Length: 115
Image (cartoon, rainbow, N blue to C red; front, top):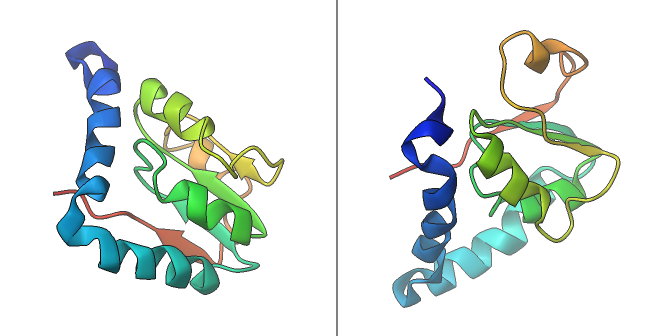
């Protein structure tokens, strides 16, 4: 199933509003500082990157970064985030064979929680 067919690309930006809720502000500020340190200099594979909210914080710290999602619309949004325009950051559409190409030696995997 192509998730864009059911409007997924249009809804993906809505998910960022979860991060704007005041009750999450302190926790998210801490995570935005702490998480990049955990991935510094590593080859990171991000599964289900969605709108790229976390990609924009992790990709600049990584040696190489591959963000995957089944939605081309989500990948387009993620690719527009600040800090993800470096040659070390890639945004292919998620396909089983495409994900293996040069990421066999990735040293970290990031999968943001979805609720």
